[in-house]
Amino acid sequence: MESKELSIVIVTYKSEGKIYNCLDSIPNNIKVKIVENSNDKNFKSKIESKYRNVKCILTGSNKGYAIANNIGLNDVDTRFALVLNPDTILDKTAIDNFFIAEKKIEDFWLIGPASDQQVNKDFNDNHILEVNNLKGFAIFFNMKKFNRNFFDENYFLYFEEIDLCKKVKKNNGKIFLDKNILIKHEGASSVEKTKKMELEKNRNWHWMWSTFYFHKKYNGFFFALINISPKFISSIFKTLFYLLILNNVKRDIYFCRFSGIINSIMGKKSWYRPSLD
Image (cartoon, rainbow, N blue to C red; front, side):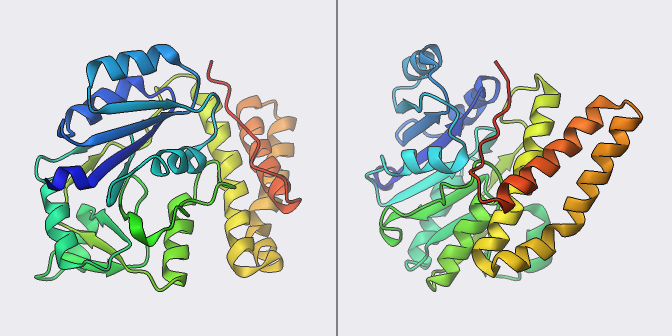
């Protein structure tokens, strides 16, 4: 019966090479919502034909991590939800151990699995630890705590889970790690390894945009400007330097850094999108 209280949300974008390992690790009696950031009807058909417990929602275009997760979470009708990256694999005990944890800490807002480093460093005899932040690859939500208000949709990439945790703590919510919840994360591999340069430019643009936006949101414009200034100055000089020595690859990367910062300072949306078609 516990499995009927949990839904899993997975945001994908050109992730077909990874998603099957993830889905194979999920018990087939748990609802899964895949939110595919495209209009790939062939992907939807293949996934839903192979897995009867999976519903695939097509966004129509690449809307990013925050918007897509909110689409999935707002389609959830269970008490709990688990947001997963497509390059994760659940241990056979992961779901059972989550339900053990939620019974011990009924007032939680978020629960995440602990990394090996955290287990060795922070935990004593208790397998559950209250924290301020979680890694974004796997987060359990207590749905009744959020009133359908989840991720800040201004983010396209980076800082979404940091912002979420910040919001939870500002509302006096409780966040926990559980070292008994085991979820393997391959990392940096949700998108197939094609067009590496496009992905690198995308990462640099959005890391800079999101950095400034996050600090402006929580600490004000001038603090954010001071915080970003060294990276801003560096991006200008390195763009010019690599332009002069005809290194187009690094020139483009540092120009993307500069562009991400300047767009965020100017209050423009996180509009940059990689060309992966």
